[in-house]
Structure formats: C-alpha cells, structure tokens
Length: 205
Ligand SMILES: [Fe+2]
Ligand SMILES: [Fe+2]
Image (cartoon, rainbow, N blue to C red; front, top):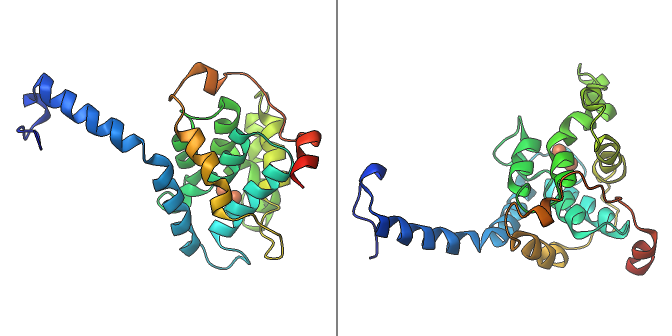
C-alpha cells in the first residue's frame, strides 16, 4: 500500500489505519530536526531588538546551560519562544504544547506561563499589568518561572553575550524528543528541579 483508498476517515479499514500509524511513528522520529529548522526560521522574526529571536533563544539556553541546569531546562529555554512564528498572541502556550509530552511538568508549566511572568519587566510601559503573574500565586512552580524569566528570558537580549551555537544544543533536543511521550518518569508531576546547579555550572564554564 502506498496510499490509503479512503476519502473519508469513516471509510478507512484496520489495515489502512495500521499503515498510517506506521507512517506517523516514522514522522515523529524527525520532530527534533523539524524543531531545529524552526529555530533557524525564528531568525527572521521580530525585528527591533538587538538580537534576533534565534539569538535570544540561544542566549537563554546558553545561560541555562552555564547555570548548571539539567537537559529539561536547557531545551525548554531553547524552545520557549518557538511559538513566535505561528502564534504571536499565545506563543507561550504554543511552545508548551510542543514540549509538554517530553519534559518535566515543571518546565512545561514555566514555558506556558512565561509570557505573563515577563510582563513584570515591561507591562508598565505598554499599558499592561506588570503583576499579571500574580494570578499564578499558589502554583508550586511560581518561583521557578519567576527565576526562569529573571535569569534567562528577560536577560537574554545582549548582542555581546557569548552564545553557544545551535549545533551545541542539537544532541539535547534529539535526546528530549526521542523520549517516550507522556512517560510519567519524564513528566515527573510535582517534582521541582532547581534551575541552577553550582557544581555543574563550574564544570561547564
Ligand atoms: Fe516569550
Ligand atoms: Fe523569550
């Protein structure tokens, strides 16, 4: 079979759906590569800053790496703005949706809410609410997202910072997206891992 025969899903056979499932599994194997390509596309988005969106993403991930953060944090930092391409009004939710099956719940939550937390830094200049993040007070991950934004996101617009290149992060993206999606050992509901690890940070300088 090269293609299914049906033109309406309701007419498909078991064999056809097994055939399609095999195709989908093969397709998912290349998610990491597609995301890396999308990151390169980010280079063309959002002019006006001193760094491109790709530069901002690399800088956020580099800061996470140099802080001694684990792979879930580093990959989340790298991809946290990937939604800027197609979802400018909810880019945080878009990125979190991509990451959620493959990273710790803690990291997906921070990516999902980072847009509101970032308002702390500029909301007062644009007629927004700088304290928009307060709606999340009581979340176990509130302090983590506050630190994510303070240390990595809002700080990563410096053209003179020594960013690590995209290829440095490629194996980490490959590893994360090769995980079993929604595996409880991956999503680790309720587990908080610090954003910083001094011993690892010292090794990575
Ligand atoms: Fe963002
Ligand atoms: Fe960002």
